Amino acid sequence: MDKLLDGYHRFRATGWPERKALFERLAALGQKPQTLVIACSDSRVDPSMIFDAGPGELFVVRNVANLVPAYSTPDHQHHGTSAAIEFAVRVLEVREIVVLGHALCGGAGALIDGAPPQAQDFLPDWIRIGAPARDIALNLSDDPAERRTIVEYQCVKLSLRNLATFPWVRERLEDGRLALQGAYFAVATGVLERLGPDGTFAPA
Image 1 (cartoon, rainbow, N blue to C red):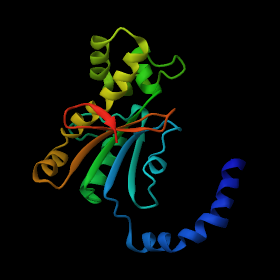
Image 2 (cartoon, rainbow, N blue to C red):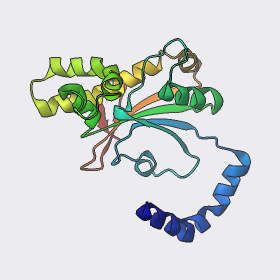
Image 3 (cartoon, rainbow, N blue to C red):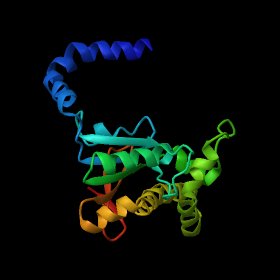
């Protein structure tokens, strides 16, 4: 906590004065981001840093392996990712959703090798969402490293497909109020790839 507080004090000394007016405006007018980013929880992949975005510009959802579950009938269970998507789309009325995958993803690795033995309470059920991505990778390659990369790419595509199963997302896609985008960040090189209409990723 001490390191975090040191960072906060630096922010108060330098960052806050520079952005005081912005935060006051956001407090008075509320947030109106145009983009929802669904990213991995990985500490090396910060959407605001990657897209050089300031406060109020992005509504960010982060979870293991940037997975979006398919829409399911509302019940009394906990649906954190779906709830955040609903809020962004139906309340904030974002104009686009970006699913941001990345290299060296531990969740993608767990899809191939299984969840770590010390994380068996919730992780196995969660990453099961990505089973179709894993199956594609297993069918396309026998090389472990290549399989992992394929899973990472396929998790982005799978999440985009699952987004379209939400009725209020599909409705907005059909009438042009919403667009879906896929992207992939290479941690070691800092290169961002974008998913094109042909289904392949290429440097943005």
